[in-house]
Image (cartoon, rainbow, N blue to C red; front, side, top):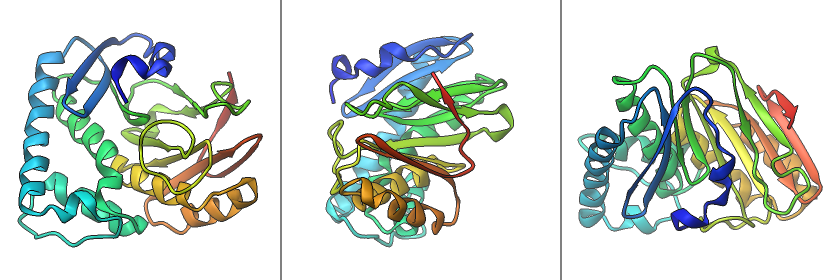
Length: 241
């Protein structure tokens, strides 16, 4: 999705933080930090993209498979984390790429900023010293931007990742408007959101999706929206916006 098409970013405030945009090829990040760390972020993104692109050149199946994939113990940390997240959620490793990049970039930037919000196409790595609210964008559903998830500072660092079968360019075999997943691993949250979204074809499948999320070790909570129906499981505190 092109940067200018990500209209939801106009609603992202990151109160008290400096916001800036970082884009390298397909990687498109909106970052909030204590100060403008764009140069550092660009360098970090390029590093992790080199790791990813190098591995894909030598293992093209890493890019294309929709099934869990084993990787070598000596593979880059990013590659191992993506593969582990995919295996845990039962999907291919690239289902975790946006969350993994957001987290790896975010954790590196924490050396220069005490607070960080790294958003990568709806997948967020959050480290905050204060309470934050993450608004849920769910396409044409009436819930879209009318509800949010309250995140307390002691829950962070945290991954908050959203998958949709009706919004955006990411591959999904489901038809839900939003699946949002919370996990200490943003890579796992991303992969789990994709896997749960694949299971939701209609509002009748919401409980099935939530039951699936509850079965994944490391997932703390989740929310699923399909049309005018919504279901919530786990450590998710909703609030009206």
